[in-house]
Every structure is written in structure tokens, then in C-alpha cells.
Image (cartoon, rainbow, N blue to C red):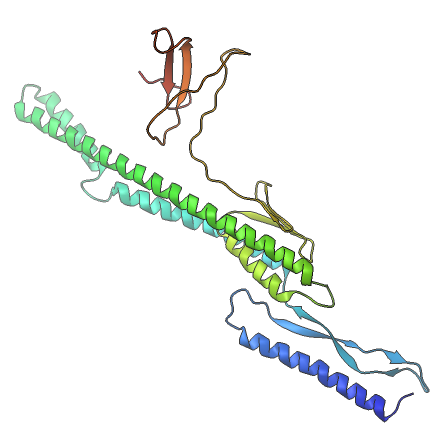
Length: 307
């Protein structure tokens, strides 16, 4: 039956609810500069009614849950565009490095030296017996050869540097996948939709997914409460709920194909290092010591063969 105690209870419940709202507002202000933080708010609900004369009488309000302002569609769009922007930014940086290596704006670039080399040939064709013209041609040819060798060395160093950067990115990606899977596990333990929303854990996971998208294109399938699957753009699974998968950066490896079905294949021994891909074809079988076996090698997948 409504009375003074009921009125006091309504006031007490309202004060508790508003106190929670003030606390959440203060938390929003404190985290205004926190990366990945989503603004939160308290959702209020009626505290129920009782049947009475002349009709139902309300029992005040209560703080039902703490929600976060989060748009899943915008987040997915951001992750997709972030991956695209990071990809083009990386390619732009690598092309700038290549452009700096060739340095064609300089008068000593390969294009200018090669043009001079062709002009020396033209001069020599007009005076084939002229010794200075021959010497000038030889000097020009030597300059072109030196620049080509130098740029080839620079390109090789750039290739090595790029591989090292990729290897570092793979390590970062694997670490991010482990953290995301661990957060999915924590979200499953603490998240109870509509009652106890794991807002902070969800913010942390979304921030990691954003960082992941800056290294690799990803697609996200979030079913809620930590049931989340992350895949590559090609459809390979990276994280399945609380199970992370790993990427691996591998160097060259040998694939052996028999000449005829059932033929025995032995390893081809190779020492040293190379960034080229070699195709080795056995022409005549046998052992190398008896001079019977013959093979040929290609650097372009079998289009041409090294002599």
C-alpha cells in the first residue's frame, strides 16, 4: 500500500539511478582523450507499477544498464577504409624510395647516361677510326655499367629491407591476434547484454582491430558477447572467438616434381643465398660424379634457360 515509506523508496531509487548517471558522465569526461574510448550513458527504466485506486501507481525509476554509443556500420566502414589507406600509404612510401634510388631528375641518372651512351655510338659511327670517339664510348659504357650495378645493389638492399619490415609486421599481427582472442575470452566471461555490458573490453578489442587493419585487410563478423570471427579479405580465418591463428613469413623453399610417375626424387643441394627463384630441370638422369646427369636452370620460370 502506498505511503510515506513508498515515497521515500522512490526517491532513494531515483537518487541511486542519477548517482550512477553522474558517475558515468564523470567517467566520460575523464576519458575524453583516451584512444578508442566510446562515450557511455545510463539507460533508465520504470521500476514497475502496483495496482491501486484510482489506478496503477509507479514505483519510480532505476538504472537498467550502462550502454556505449557505438555504430557497428560506421566501425566496419572505418576498418575497411583504414586498411585501404594504410596499403596505399605503404606503397607510396616504397615507390618514393625507388624513385630516390633512380634519381632520374639528376643529370647523372641512368636515363641521361644512357642517352649519352647512344650519342657516343652515333659519333663513333660517323668517325669509326677516331681514337678519342672510341675512348669516349668506352668511358660512357663504363659509366652506364657502373650505375646499373649500383642501382641493382640498391634495389637488392631495398628488397632485403622490405622483407624485414614484412617479417616485423607479421610478428605484430600475431601479437594483435593473441590479444584480440584473449579479449574475446574475457568478454564472454563478463558480458551479459542488457544487464552487465563489457563496454571497456569491447572498446579495447575494437581499438586492436583498428590497429590490425592498418597491417592487413580484415573482415569482421561480430555475433556479440565475445562471439567474434576475424578473417582476411581472402577469407582466411585469423581469430575464431578465443582461438587465434598465426601468420608465418617464409623464405624460399624447394618444390620437387618427378619427371615420370613413380620416379625417385632426391634433394638438390644448394649452398649460399639468393632472392631469385630458380627452376631446375633434369635433362639426363644419373649421378653427378659419373658425368651422365645433366640439368638446366631458369630464372623466369622456364621461359629462358641460363647458359
